[in-house]
Amino acid sequence: MKHMIEIRIHGRGGQGNVAAAELLSIAAFQDGKFAQAFPSFGAERIGAPVQAFVRIDDKKVRTREDVLHPDYLIVQDYHLIEMVPVLEGLKPDGLVLVNSDKSPEELNLKTTATVETIPATEIALEIIGRPIPNAIMIGAFCSITGLVSLEAVQEAIMARFPGKVGENNVAALERAHEIMQKR
Amino acid sequence: MLKQIEGSQAVADVVALCRPNVIAAYPITPQTHIVEDLSLIVGQGKLDAEFVNVESEFSAASVVLGASAAGARAYTATSSQGLLLMAEVINCISGMRLPIVLTCANRAISAPLSIWNDQQDSMAVRDAGWIQLFAEDNQEAADLHIQAYKIAEQTFLPVMVCMDGFILTHAFEPVDIPEQKEVDDFLPPFKPRHIVDPRWPRGIGLYADPRFYMETRYILHRAMEKSEKIIKEVSADFAKTFGRDSGGFIKTYKLKEADVAIVSMGSVVGTIKDLVDQLEEEGKKVGLLQICSYRPFPRQEIYNVLKDKMNIVVLEKCISLGRGGILASDIRWSFPRAEKKDRNISSFIAGLGGRNITVDDLRHMVERVEKEPVELDFLGLKKELIADKDL
Image (cartoon, rainbow over all chains, first blue to last red; front, top):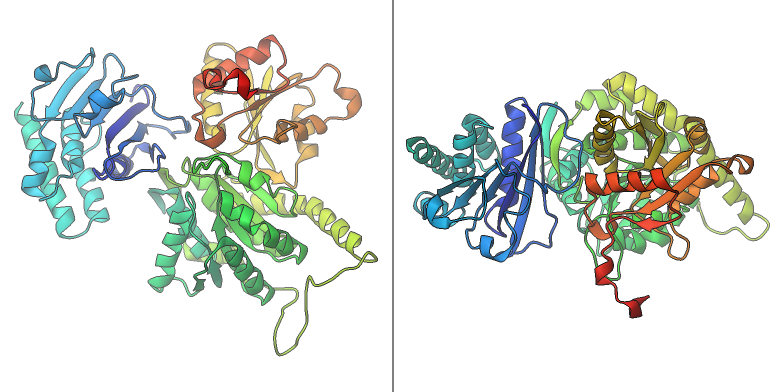
């Protein structure tokens, strides 16, 4: 890796933002990298805007500051973009992945970074039966960036959510991967 | 085994490996995950311990006091208001020379209410006769608990392991969790000095009139000073056994050649190390002195590594209201009076109530002290939020 990769996840309490960050860090660790994941430490409650952070590097991650200049943004709720400065600090050559049924062009985001979208809530309702988009967002993220292996994320999901919940989330993750590969 | 886990989980796993007989704690953010994880470990039968549910931190501290006095290895954890509520018992525990280990998941204190991190809580009991060790990362937080029991049970002083709330307790990062046998070999079973037992009634810590009280404080102070040797020995022994440096008295990073020395403790030293490396690439010599043992205070060690440094800046997440930097006062006191003349020791308060401490903030701090010493300032203070009538 040329430099430490920083990821910021935006969502609402209940969408599995912190879990997504933790799972990405576990998967990166399984891939043999150093990783750090932490939440934005709010008094989180269902529906409130939440942030979580991930750092991935070839060497030990030491810094403890919030991720202010992410390489990657994962936005689990499109409407947050109108509410909070989600895009703030995103690197000009970075990437933002948005949970939306619209195309990247239709979103018309004010950024030079690459924009990708996936209808994660729709897929979650179909496969998992609940509107929790995090597995789909992680799946799409891994598929686009290749930063963390899908196998490692699948293992991390099954270790954390053994049984049906894990299996459904892994299926959702695979669907996200298929969709992104077809583009 | 190296695992990618939450800091709280790492601490709970390692505390369980220390085989405490009694655990009593009351949940308070951001310490809650530690005791939740421990209650699960006990509930699943993986640790043979008495997990005592209590209705307050005052009771939690009282339960571990009683358990330790009865000869048990005891553990508790808390944060912020919880530690303040324990304060009365905290002083009894050290006065009775009970080797209890407490995790303080460092958090700001009320009012106004803040669940976020700073180090004001453990500072509020810094004079209570507890050894206070500060963790840099979750590996060190885990390792310090194993060392803490060994130090406590050799010195008969209680040990508080301080780890930054949320920043460490809620962070996932790689932590090597030792095997049970390794911990058993390192940490022998607790051999109490005195035991309270109904079969042989006796009391400890009961009553000392003016003929006796002062001597107990003198002895306690000397015991704190003398614990320096044990803390260093245990840390060295730990490094030999487990193959990594953790704890000890102080640590330095690129300090020897440094023109500016930053002094701090806790998790912010990780961010400072990144800054030191960045500045080095730009041709600036800045170094770090990290305080691992805050009490006992490593005055001589600090003097030894800082005596040639003329530009020192102390960064801390706490304040003595009406006085200023607490660690800064300690550092200023570490030099003989005659030597103080040309030495600049600046003091910065940062990160109170969870205010983010960025590399840019720290860079700005270094740039300022390169120009002139700063008696006291607050890093990242939003002056626009303060009205003239507030001052």
